[in-house]
Image 1 (tube, one colour):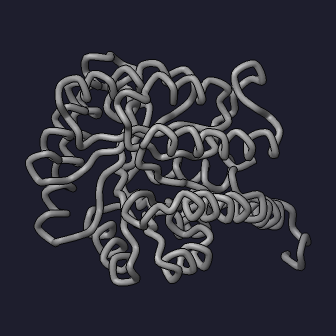
Image 2 (spheres, rainbow, N blue to C red):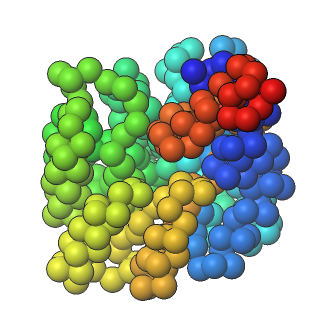
Image 3 (cartoon, helix red, strand yellow):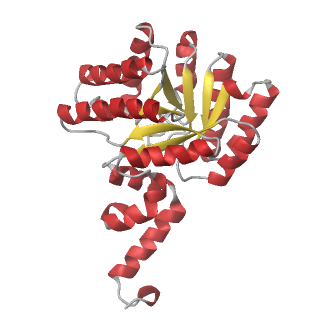
Length: 298
């Protein structure tokens, strides 16, 4: 039902997940996070673009973000989606755009995270990462998704690079032959992947809002005697904020994903689809609007 929900209602209820439409909005949010002892990574919204010029515009926006981060002294990196840079249009276009961002980040002593999207893009996304590392760019990291059955093999194949990895569960709907479907299966593979990454000497961003996985992550890094500079936890803006604050209070590093941009609608729908309680509220509100007399409305 969500695609049929009026945009103003989606914006009102999902606004906590996005900083706003402009870079000024993102800076305001990042400054507040930094003031609470939290790090950030900024994402310019825009995926699966239809024109090369749109992808180049996203790349230019990222270069502006990196300039602004430095000018304002923000403690933030950037995170990029390959489809936003034109991966679905042409590999070379995406590589050109991504390289321009990584080089700009390098000039400003900053870092770029290449995000992972649905499974149709996994091979090319890893190819982009490997090519950048072979070219000597050390200020770039990758994302691996625990629900994919291939992830442990990917960790093994990347081990020689000792990559900086954001490990998350994964949100895209994938068939059973390539992705674990059971909640506990995904949890178990997340922990196996975390152990494998740490065994390989990787810096890991433990990206989850699952309190059980957060607790297990804390136990694992504690058992290994890792200092707070050797790993971090990562969360989405507006999600499990109390848990994040508790982690910071315990001395862990926490990085918050801060998206902004005009392409807020598609992103908001995904966040709502992941949050049944909020999605249910929207559904009930929409039914009340469409059916006079429901919930006391007339």
